[in-house]
Image 1 (cartoon, helix red, strand yellow):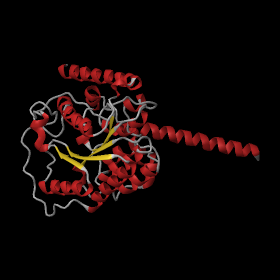
Image 2 (image 1 turned 90 degrees about the horizontal axis):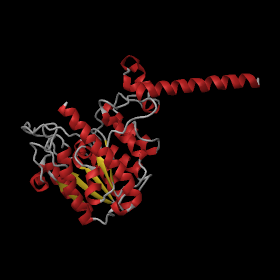
Image 3 (image 1 turned 180 degrees about the vertical axis):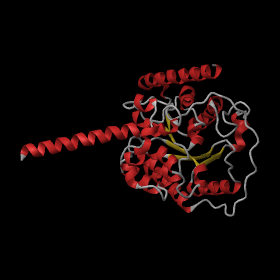
Image 4 (image 1 turned 90 degrees about the vertical axis):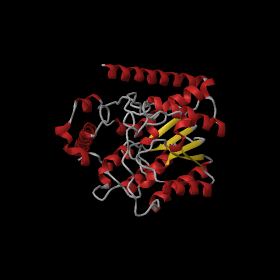
Length: 343
């Protein structure tokens, strides 16, 4: 009887290992194409804490250079960003982050408040799959699922990706055990240039009221930061499309006033920041390239050091060593991207 139990247990263990290996192989690796899917999990490799944490969508992870904030001001920062990150996803990522550290300042980009309901599974996956398991991830899944999604597909991704056998590529095998780093403390770098062109005229809306569901998660962020003694800064990135309606802006201005928060709409500040959208964007004005992100970071970094008691960690040997290595990688990627463009 004892021998039979050992045999059965061994078979179950082998089956579990095979399924785990199959799941690992079939899950998208987000290394060579849609690298945004690798961003969330990279945070857990960080060795040191950060005094400034950004949360939000592409308007943070493509528009702010964490390395320029370090190089110019000694600010330690991280961007917990992901594609089309919705307000509730930002809240649960903030909640998750505070399990690991307590920054002095949290910066939230308000564009996502335009969405009041779950949008699309592909974006959900890029915001959620990389999170470590905790109640924050569980609640994030529940809040984010579309009607066609199932909770168990997040618990056991093989149920969702089992049909990828025919789509497996070289990167799925190369990155079975490890992944390459794709960001710089959450910043997604692009050095190419594509000047901003004309945008379509904004469509009038039937109702300009920001949704109660999205705004309730802004309430949660505000309360959580207050509880932890963290300064919450609301921003609207300086890019002009997707369109940010004045009626939305008025609601955020009032919200900030009512809750004693700082809100900066950077769209009318493009000249003050020093942005030139003929050279500072790589995709016709939707996001900033390296040049634009560094300009914006210089501007916003000065605001941070002027208004909050941040530490200049360039004088700290431990931080200087780690960030020295990060800067080496940063400048190496700049040269590699420029070489690729020239090639």
